Length: 403
Image (cartoon, rainbow, N blue to C red):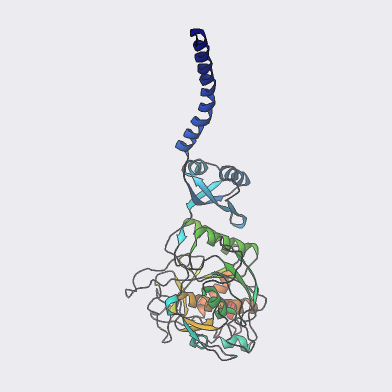
């Protein structure tokens, strides 16, 4: 090969390399930069007060993984640290809180569940008699026309249960069928049917709605709770039963509970099962700890505080919560303990009162329940029983609603 030919070959190769270099740079450099600057995202609950702020949030977080809870002026969104920082300085964005995960939020002791048999047409647990629940049935106050949402693990079909409707708000299933057992049990305490087939709940004609916010292990999150409360507001529930508890103090939870309360919903929650022998400790958990919620502690069949029951200044009322019988997911019946068991006793009573006194507000219903409770322990309101154990005695007496 001549020198001239070699020179031409070298020029051609060099020119090709020079042309290719910008193309490679255009491909490689942006990929390297993107990798270096990519930020991990985290799940947050974002509150907004204006439509413009909502639009800015949408633009920042996108719509694919963002859930809006319009009745709460709130959204759950994945945000990077820089996106969160920018939104925190945006007018109309009022709060940004981390989405907390709650382990074992369902407040009943699964390990102690026992299968039992039930005779037809009876209120099968000592608890119904202790609170004189039959007084309401005798007066034909059965919760008819009252809408009760059970925010829990869902509700399964059962011959003793009539489910008015519901929704699954967890991500892994679209069915509100109970895959844990907790929610079905709670539903039976409130609304087991007076149909001759099994036990009778406190408010057998109440419209019971299954709002599935907990998974098969009874776990949930702030986002799940927000979605459940948002649904309850949207669907105009009268009463919301939350037999759940978690330790995290969250201002965003307080805000959503206040919103539901301000919409006229009576909120009832289990105080929690982390009580100790030292009853001076404040062990009541959220959402019961909120002033917008009736915190329900548990008593045993001696009408004494159940050893597991949480204590604290937020205790509002007590209810039977040990060795209680109700419906199970296998179409049968079972016995459970827990403040989860106590809370629906209050919700069932509230449903009969709402039927009897439809004009009463949520605060007035709460007051009616409190002043007619049976004082236990230290005279007056205390940290173990609140105002006392709930009772159907005297709540339907003439003038009761105006006391």
